[in-house]
Length: 460
Image (cartoon, rainbow, N blue to C red; front, side, top):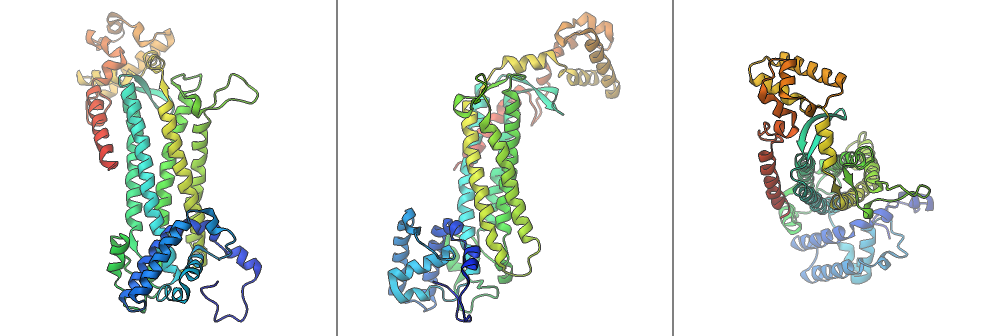
């Protein structure tokens, strides 16, 4: 069955049909296509194209079709060019000739846009729930080791001491922004295209506001040419997915390092790691490596659609059919990665002594000393120079911070008064960082509580 053909003397070749068909991937839109078509049947009744009895038969047939479509057998043997043609054919099998009226005043251009927007809105909601799951796991892990001290890094070099919950809250903030981005993608997709026609608007006096209410769309598209050629909402989703995967990839990279023998901070559960076919001693962080690898696939999906859209003239072009594969691929890889990351986090066990020792034996306290000198009246550039010389002397003599006494410090620089020795303990320096967003213990405890409250609001 074709939705077009009167203008043609001959049908398409087998090669063209095979090349241009999209049912293999756009079948995922069938629920949206059925729901949108039911709403359109009600709109057709309001303008007198369908009688109430015809509308009722069509809507009921669509309900049956949706239930049947849950079985793979529904699609067996289907040779339709796309899901929209399949749905119309199946409708005609159920209700007869009245099915031919369902496409009155509607273009596949607006129909595809509607179906994809509905799918994006639903998928964005699913992703937001998965993000909440990962954020909740991070908070649980933070509370489990609430007092653990670790070195914070810049340039992958030990920089300043922070609390383990402060570190995990950094990823919580990243994922919270992702949650917001998917909300924005959901909002941008929630603009009803029905009534736009192929590009010039419908020739029938449809009540677009009524259709929008029927389908739960909060807004209408404003320009029929724009909506015909618009895939910004798909790009918004793909951008949000790409950034979320970047965040997961960064966390994966951290934990691949932290769970290595060289760091020894973390132990990952057996359920999320694997062994070697040759080396019996191996426990490899495969789940995290796969997340890191899949981030590249999602970035590729965004790039693919960007390149597809970049040179298209107004309005609809068949190139835009190529939006679905990257959209579905990115959604699948992101959802799988979020599910996997939650399991990894839940399996992780911190060995607090290891990062604490790394902080204590390194010079993460150097900034604390310099700032204390500045608070005592030494100009900061001079304070920076004094502490730099102090660290250099320590390195030359093989001394750790804890090896210095107050008397030795005063002997090195008179600016180091007796109370400076306490700052050689990383925890003392952290206590000075009770500023909003800082790693001071009271600030971090409050941030954890606030994050839990925010997560509760996100999860509603």
